[in-house]
Image (cartoon, rainbow, N blue to C red; front, side, top):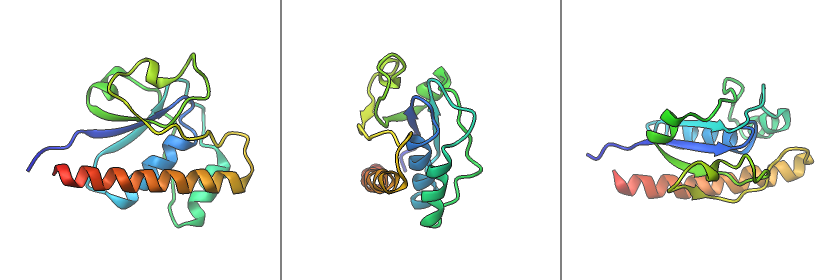
Length: 135
């Protein structure tokens, strides 16, 4: 059986999109090693993001924003969630990145954050199918 690299979800603040993706991957494929990080991580998760994940039974309260490191990059398949800030965009620092181009939930109403959550869920499910074929 082929060994799978870690999946790394990246965005700038690591407080929303990448945390949602990490939560979904842990839920749908607990056997796959996953982490999320940001180039300019916030001190805590976006509370609306935590709430919309709780609505569907996924608790991400133990996840914390982390700074993107070279070790994380070297050991992972990298998924960039999208960029709100071109100067801090993780895709600028990483080559061979999968880019999902998903809107940032920051400063959005809860209905919009639910839409973002559902979009990320669909992308994560597609990724899991693709990864399962590689095993």
